Image 1 (cartoon, rainbow, N blue to C red):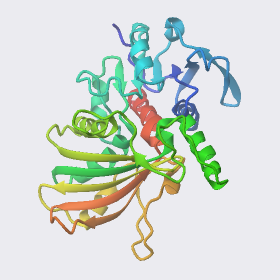
Image 2: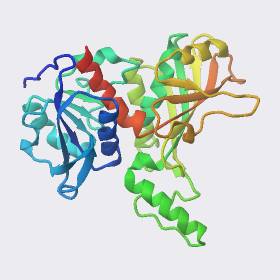
Image 3: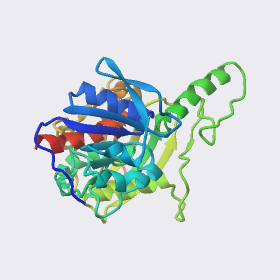
Image 4: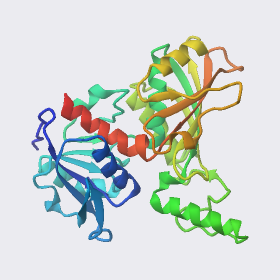
Length: 342
């Protein structure tokens, strides 16, 4: 397998696999918004979505059904079509000499595959062998906040509870939340088809499969991926993930135990100076980050940083981030930007 290195700032032939989904749409939008150097753009999807059109720089591009020949002449593939599609097409992508940046969970824990958050571990991206994994959305948001704090003092343990929006389950789940909310307001009983239970004026523990340890798959993704990204294989970590009736943007309540105490002042200074983070803190008016603050925006909002009253070595904080944007599409494009600007 021979991978073509990217000449700095040279326009690339690029394909978006899974272009008809919510993350696929966001990828296309961000490529244009960030002026990524694109020579040719191919939009690929399943047979079901082929034949539709998407906007690109004032014109429309037809979505093509993906085949083994779809990657000929392509330099970079941004894949967001799910794990099974990523496994199916990886060989054809790499055989064409293209780099695959994959948004699914298929390869994240493969020790040969870099798992990258550019603000946290950019150097590992350059060790790729034709494949780079994009982390889980909640993991990206959390690691962006943990990394600057780890520079204050070593982190011993993390306890996190997530409040995950419908967007994490895709565009169909977002539409279902809208429709079922209207049903409830009209006095009807909602019946969910996309998610196992209705999210309309409701919440439930994350619907990913339960593991033998009684943690769900989403929770274990956070545990294992955070350890890998931060190169902390022995980090003590526990998570509880919850679906909440928010259209777009995840939130997380985080408790961080350090080896030695870190002051709130020091933590706040570290986060304020960290890339990709903004502080929203108004203790007088009890105003802290909300999903509406970050929807459609790049930054992760952090606030309510406080001393844990039960443990002198621990701090607590709250964060919100756009799941589709920084939690998926933006992070993938930022990885690509690392490789074309070096």
